[in-house]
Amino acid sequence: MTKEQLRLRSLLTTALFAAIIGIMAQLIIPLPLVPITGQTLAIGLAAVILGSKYGTFSILLYLALGCAGVPVFAEFSAGFSVIVGPTGGYLISYIPVVWLMGKYLEKTKFTFAHALTANLIGMFITLIIGTAWLKWLTELSWSAAFLAGFAPFIIGGLIKAIMAAWIGLIVRKRLISARLLFTNQLSTKPVDKSAS
Image 1 (cartoon, rainbow, N blue to C red):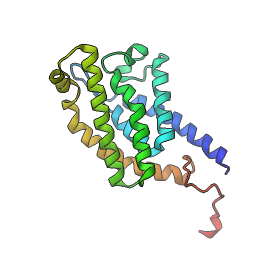
Image 2: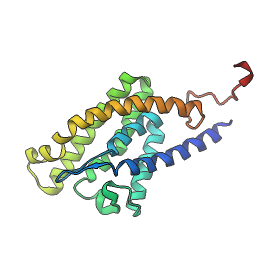
Image 3: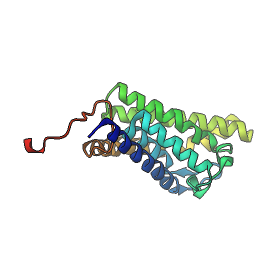
């Protein structure tokens, strides 16, 4: 299989992952201003499974679909108004967060410890950007913004970070074995089945 064929498969996997993010965004625990969703778990999985390049592509595609009117944001919402609304900071933060998480893993190693570290860093960056955006847009005080946009998500974020690291590494390994994910370290030579 050529590198071009592997890249095409990776792009298809990336597109599928954008849909998965949209589906997981509908797993919701409602809160007054910012709901708890499965979306951030999917973001962590995107970084661990796809890495910086394809992970970022999946986020960009997900956001583009939402802005184009496909109801992939939380509570089946869509449109550019969601991006510029009170929760838009969280959505926008996903782009640099997934890229940074993927880069960290690519520069270190795809192990549980590093994947968990990447997810914890990503969680705090997302919460900081999202809370600052919420404060700026709604003119809340910093303490009110912290209580609405940061504090309620810490425990859930820790749990999702562990899940994304653990599940993500398993799925990544299987996608690479199935040649559905291209990495720079992956050999493009055909597998000699007779040797097994």
